[in-house]
Length: 259
Image: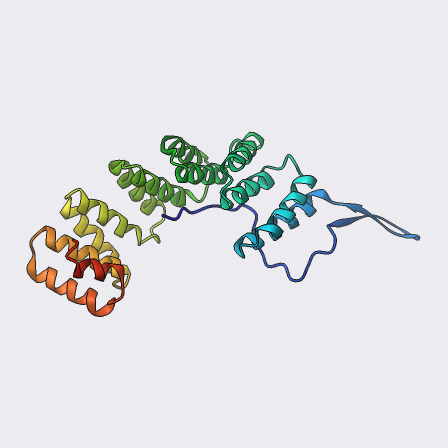
Protein backbone atom coordinates (compact mmCIF):
# COMPACT_ATOMS: atom_id res chain seq x y z
CA UNK A 1 0.00 0.00 0.00
CA UNK A 2 1.73 3.14 -1.19
CA UNK A 3 0.88 6.51 0.30
CA UNK A 4 1.12 9.78 -1.57
CA UNK A 5 3.60 12.04 0.17
CA UNK A 6 3.84 15.77 -0.45
CA UNK A 7 7.25 17.39 -0.64
CA UNK A 8 6.79 21.15 -0.52
CA UNK A 9 10.12 22.18 -2.00
CA UNK A 10 10.38 21.32 -5.70
CA UNK A 11 13.16 19.00 -6.77
CA UNK A 12 14.29 20.78 -9.91
CA UNK A 13 17.38 19.20 -11.44
CA UNK A 14 20.67 20.49 -10.05
CA UNK A 15 23.54 19.84 -12.44
CA UNK A 16 27.01 19.19 -11.11
CA UNK A 17 28.21 19.35 -7.54
CA UNK A 18 27.70 22.16 -5.05
CA UNK A 19 31.14 23.34 -4.03
CA UNK A 20 29.89 26.20 -1.88
CA UNK A 21 26.68 27.64 -0.52
CA UNK A 22 24.62 30.63 -1.58
CA UNK A 23 25.97 34.16 -1.27
CA UNK A 24 24.37 37.42 -2.25
CA UNK A 25 25.82 40.77 -3.24
CA UNK A 26 25.14 43.35 -0.52
CA UNK A 27 27.30 46.24 -1.69
CA UNK A 28 29.17 47.13 -4.85
CA UNK A 29 31.94 49.68 -4.46
CA UNK A 30 35.07 50.54 -6.33
CA UNK A 31 36.84 47.90 -4.28
CA UNK A 32 34.48 45.23 -5.62
CA UNK A 33 31.36 43.42 -4.47
CA UNK A 34 30.94 42.54 -0.82
CA UNK A 35 29.36 39.11 -0.40
CA UNK A 36 27.16 37.90 2.45
CA UNK A 37 26.13 34.32 3.19
CA UNK A 38 22.43 33.61 2.55
CA UNK A 39 21.30 30.86 5.00
CA UNK A 40 17.76 30.68 3.58
CA UNK A 41 18.92 30.12 0.02
CA UNK A 42 21.63 27.72 1.19
CA UNK A 43 19.13 25.64 3.16
CA UNK A 44 16.76 25.42 0.19
CA UNK A 45 19.58 24.27 -2.08
CA UNK A 46 20.66 21.62 0.41
CA UNK A 47 17.10 20.35 0.81
CA UNK A 48 16.69 20.06 -2.96
CA UNK A 49 19.90 18.08 -3.16
CA UNK A 50 18.81 15.88 -0.26
CA UNK A 51 15.53 15.07 -2.00
CA UNK A 52 17.37 14.14 -5.19
CA UNK A 53 19.66 11.85 -3.22
CA UNK A 54 16.66 10.31 -1.45
CA UNK A 55 15.14 9.50 -4.83
CA UNK A 56 18.41 7.83 -5.77
CA UNK A 57 18.44 6.05 -2.37
CA UNK A 58 21.80 7.59 -1.54
CA UNK A 59 21.04 8.01 2.13
CA UNK A 60 24.51 9.15 3.18
CA UNK A 61 24.57 12.18 0.86
CA UNK A 62 20.92 12.94 1.63
CA UNK A 63 21.74 13.06 5.34
CA UNK A 64 24.83 15.21 4.79
CA UNK A 65 22.82 17.81 2.90
CA UNK A 66 19.97 17.75 5.41
CA UNK A 67 22.42 18.22 8.27
CA UNK A 68 23.71 21.37 6.57
CA UNK A 69 20.19 22.61 5.82
CA UNK A 70 19.20 22.15 9.46
CA UNK A 71 22.36 23.94 10.60
CA UNK A 72 21.50 26.92 8.37
CA UNK A 73 17.76 27.01 9.18
CA UNK A 74 16.99 25.00 12.35
CA UNK A 75 13.58 26.63 12.79
CA UNK A 76 12.39 26.20 9.20
CA UNK A 77 9.33 23.95 9.01
CA UNK A 78 10.14 22.71 5.50
CA UNK A 79 13.63 21.58 6.51
CA UNK A 80 12.24 19.72 9.52
CA UNK A 81 9.51 18.14 7.40
CA UNK A 82 12.01 16.75 4.91
CA UNK A 83 14.24 15.55 7.75
CA UNK A 84 11.20 13.68 9.08
CA UNK A 85 10.73 12.12 5.65
CA UNK A 86 14.39 11.06 5.59
CA UNK A 87 14.09 9.32 8.97
CA UNK A 88 10.86 7.70 7.82
CA UNK A 89 12.72 6.32 4.78
CA UNK A 90 15.50 4.83 6.94
CA UNK A 91 12.99 3.37 9.44
CA UNK A 92 14.01 5.57 12.37
CA UNK A 93 10.47 6.03 13.62
CA UNK A 94 11.24 7.94 16.81
CA UNK A 95 13.31 10.55 14.98
CA UNK A 96 10.78 10.79 12.16
CA UNK A 97 8.04 11.54 14.66
CA UNK A 98 10.21 14.09 16.46
CA UNK A 99 10.80 16.06 13.27
CA UNK A 100 7.18 15.81 12.10
CA UNK A 101 6.02 17.21 15.43
CA UNK A 102 8.66 19.95 15.32
CA UNK A 103 7.59 20.91 11.78
CA UNK A 104 3.98 21.17 12.96
CA UNK A 105 4.97 23.29 15.95
CA UNK A 106 6.76 25.65 13.60
CA UNK A 107 3.91 25.75 11.07
CA UNK A 108 0.64 24.51 12.53
CA UNK A 109 -1.48 25.03 9.42
CA UNK A 110 0.68 23.19 6.87
CA UNK A 111 -1.51 20.59 5.19
CA UNK A 112 1.40 18.82 3.49
CA UNK A 113 3.00 18.09 6.85
CA UNK A 114 -0.26 16.75 8.26
CA UNK A 115 -0.69 14.56 5.17
CA UNK A 116 2.82 13.13 5.42
CA UNK A 117 2.54 12.69 9.19
CA UNK A 118 -0.72 10.82 8.68
CA UNK A 119 0.93 8.46 6.19
CA UNK A 120 3.75 7.89 8.68
CA UNK A 121 1.35 7.16 11.53
CA UNK A 122 -0.68 4.76 9.39
CA UNK A 123 2.43 2.86 8.36
CA UNK A 124 3.22 2.62 12.08
CA UNK A 125 -0.23 1.11 12.77
CA UNK A 126 -1.59 4.15 14.66
CA UNK A 127 -4.73 4.36 12.59
CA UNK A 128 -6.85 6.72 14.68
CA UNK A 129 -4.03 9.24 15.03
CA UNK A 130 -3.37 8.94 11.29
CA UNK A 131 -7.03 9.62 10.52
CA UNK A 132 -6.93 12.75 12.69
CA UNK A 133 -3.83 13.98 10.86
CA UNK A 134 -5.47 13.44 7.47
CA UNK A 135 -8.55 15.32 8.63
CA UNK A 136 -6.37 18.22 9.80
CA UNK A 137 -4.78 18.36 6.34
CA UNK A 138 -8.17 18.37 4.62
CA UNK A 139 -9.43 21.12 6.91
CA UNK A 140 -6.78 23.61 5.79
CA UNK A 141 -8.60 26.09 3.54
CA UNK A 142 -5.64 26.79 1.24
CA UNK A 143 -4.83 23.12 0.62
CA UNK A 144 -4.97 22.17 -3.07
CA UNK A 145 -4.04 18.47 -2.80
CA UNK A 146 -7.15 17.36 -0.93
CA UNK A 147 -7.74 14.45 -3.32
CA UNK A 148 -4.37 12.91 -2.43
CA UNK A 149 -5.09 13.14 1.29
CA UNK A 150 -8.54 11.61 0.87
CA UNK A 151 -6.90 8.75 -1.03
CA UNK A 152 -4.32 8.29 1.74
CA UNK A 153 -7.08 8.36 4.34
CA UNK A 154 -8.99 5.74 2.35
CA UNK A 155 -6.01 3.41 2.14
CA UNK A 156 -5.41 3.79 5.87
CA UNK A 157 -9.06 3.18 6.73
CA UNK A 158 -9.05 0.08 4.53
CA UNK A 159 -5.86 -1.15 6.17
CA UNK A 160 -7.45 -0.72 9.61
CA UNK A 161 -10.59 -2.61 8.55
CA UNK A 162 -12.92 0.42 8.59
CA UNK A 163 -14.49 -0.29 5.23
CA UNK A 164 -17.38 2.18 5.36
CA UNK A 165 -14.94 4.98 6.13
CA UNK A 166 -12.60 3.78 3.36
CA UNK A 167 -15.46 3.87 0.85
CA UNK A 168 -16.34 7.41 1.92
CA UNK A 169 -12.75 8.60 1.58
CA UNK A 170 -12.20 6.97 -1.82
CA UNK A 171 -15.44 8.53 -3.09
CA UNK A 172 -14.31 11.93 -1.80
CA UNK A 173 -10.92 11.48 -3.46
CA UNK A 174 -12.64 10.84 -6.78
CA UNK A 175 -14.92 13.84 -6.32
CA UNK A 176 -11.94 16.14 -5.74
CA UNK A 177 -9.70 14.37 -8.26
CA UNK A 178 -11.72 12.87 -11.14
CA UNK A 179 -8.46 11.97 -12.86
CA UNK A 180 -7.88 9.30 -10.21
CA UNK A 181 -9.87 6.81 -12.28
CA UNK A 182 -7.99 3.86 -10.76
CA UNK A 183 -9.78 4.48 -7.47
CA UNK A 184 -12.89 3.00 -9.07
CA UNK A 185 -11.10 -0.33 -8.84
CA UNK A 186 -10.48 0.15 -5.13
CA UNK A 187 -14.16 0.97 -4.70
CA UNK A 188 -15.24 -2.04 -6.78
CA UNK A 189 -13.02 -4.36 -4.74
CA UNK A 190 -14.51 -3.14 -1.47
CA UNK A 191 -18.06 -3.26 -2.83
CA UNK A 192 -17.59 -6.87 -3.95
CA UNK A 193 -16.25 -7.77 -0.52
CA UNK A 194 -19.29 -6.07 1.01
CA UNK A 195 -21.64 -7.85 -1.42
CA UNK A 196 -22.76 -4.48 -2.80
CA UNK A 197 -22.71 -5.85 -6.32
CA UNK A 198 -24.67 -3.08 -8.04
CA UNK A 199 -22.25 -0.46 -6.70
CA UNK A 200 -19.31 -2.61 -7.80
CA UNK A 201 -20.81 -2.87 -11.29
CA UNK A 202 -21.15 0.92 -11.55
CA UNK A 203 -17.56 1.48 -10.37
CA UNK A 204 -16.18 -0.97 -12.93
CA UNK A 205 -18.20 0.61 -15.72
CA UNK A 206 -16.80 4.02 -14.77
CA UNK A 207 -13.28 2.63 -14.96
CA UNK A 208 -13.84 0.89 -18.30
CA UNK A 209 -15.35 4.04 -19.80
CA UNK A 210 -12.03 5.86 -19.47
CA UNK A 211 -9.28 3.27 -19.13
CA UNK A 212 -8.24 0.19 -21.06
CA UNK A 213 -8.74 -3.15 -19.39
CA UNK A 214 -6.08 -4.05 -16.85
CA UNK A 215 -5.35 -7.28 -15.03
CA UNK A 216 -7.01 -5.85 -11.94
CA UNK A 217 -10.14 -4.59 -13.71
CA UNK A 218 -10.65 -7.90 -15.50
CA UNK A 219 -10.07 -9.79 -12.28
CA UNK A 220 -12.71 -7.72 -10.51
CA UNK A 221 -15.15 -8.41 -13.33
CA UNK A 222 -14.39 -12.13 -12.88
CA UNK A 223 -15.03 -11.90 -9.15
CA UNK A 224 -18.24 -9.93 -9.63
CA UNK A 225 -19.51 -12.35 -12.28
CA UNK A 226 -18.74 -15.33 -10.05
CA UNK A 227 -20.49 -13.70 -7.09
CA UNK A 228 -23.61 -13.09 -9.17
CA UNK A 229 -23.45 -16.48 -10.92
CA UNK A 230 -23.29 -14.88 -14.38
CA UNK A 231 -21.61 -17.60 -16.40
CA UNK A 232 -21.42 -15.79 -19.74
CA UNK A 233 -19.87 -12.73 -18.13
CA UNK A 234 -17.54 -14.93 -16.07
CA UNK A 235 -16.30 -16.78 -19.16
CA UNK A 236 -15.84 -13.52 -21.10
CA UNK A 237 -13.70 -11.77 -18.50
CA UNK A 238 -11.76 -14.82 -17.33
CA UNK A 239 -10.73 -15.60 -20.91
CA UNK A 240 -9.70 -11.99 -21.48
CA UNK A 241 -7.67 -12.03 -18.26
CA UNK A 242 -5.75 -15.18 -19.16
CA UNK A 243 -5.17 -14.13 -22.77
CA UNK A 244 -4.13 -10.51 -22.12
CA UNK A 245 -2.32 -10.89 -18.78
CA UNK A 246 -1.21 -14.54 -18.55
CA UNK A 247 1.67 -13.82 -16.16
CA UNK A 248 -0.27 -11.62 -13.75
CA UNK A 249 -1.07 -12.46 -10.14
CA UNK A 250 -4.73 -12.03 -11.03
CA UNK A 251 -4.54 -14.70 -13.73
CA UNK A 252 -2.84 -17.03 -11.25
CA UNK A 253 -5.65 -16.44 -8.76
CA UNK A 254 -8.20 -17.27 -11.42
CA UNK A 255 -6.41 -20.49 -12.38
CA UNK A 256 -6.34 -21.46 -8.69
CA UNK A 257 -10.09 -20.76 -8.44
CA UNK A 258 -9.37 -18.10 -5.82
CA UNK A 259 -12.32 -15.85 -6.52
